[in-house]
Length: 204
Image (cartoon, rainbow, N blue to C red; front, side):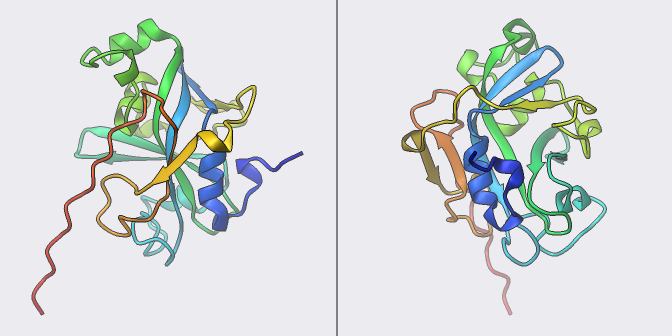
C-alpha cells in the first residue's frame, strides 16, 4: 500500500501536499473537497514559513505531531489553517488553500453570502475557514482522531498525477517562486494566483 501524507517525513512536505488533494474536510455541517494546497517547510529551510526562525508560542503546533491543525490570523480578521505533517520536532505543514463544497451547501452559502457563486464559496484559505465555521479555537486540534472540530477523510480514489499542477505560492515575499502550491487542473474552485509585491531593500 502506498504511503499516505501522514507517513511522509517533514522533508517531503511538498509530496504530502500533493497527496492531500481530493481529501475531504468536514466541520459544522459542511464538507469541502480539497482542490488547492501549499507546502511549507521548517527551520532554516523555507524563508516563507512561519517556522523558519524557530519555535515560538505562535508556531509551536507546526513542530508536531502530524495530523493537527496550525491556525493563524491574517489582517486581524481572517483565519487560515494548515495541517501539520512529518516527524515531531521538525516543522512542516500544508496550508489548506481552497476546495469544493460537496455537502452542506445551504450552510456554506449562508456563511459566505458575499460569494459570487458556489465555486467561490471556499476559493481561498480564509473563505474555506468561513464555510467550515472555524477560527483560532481549532488551533492544535487533531483532524484524524475525531477529537477536534474538523475531520479529514480520504477520497474514494487518489487524484491522478496528470491532474495535479504546481506553481508559486500566493502572497509570500520570501521564496516566492518556489513551486509548492498544488492544485487540481481545471477545477473552478482554485483561487486566483496573486504574487505579493516585493519589499524594497533597506539602505545599508
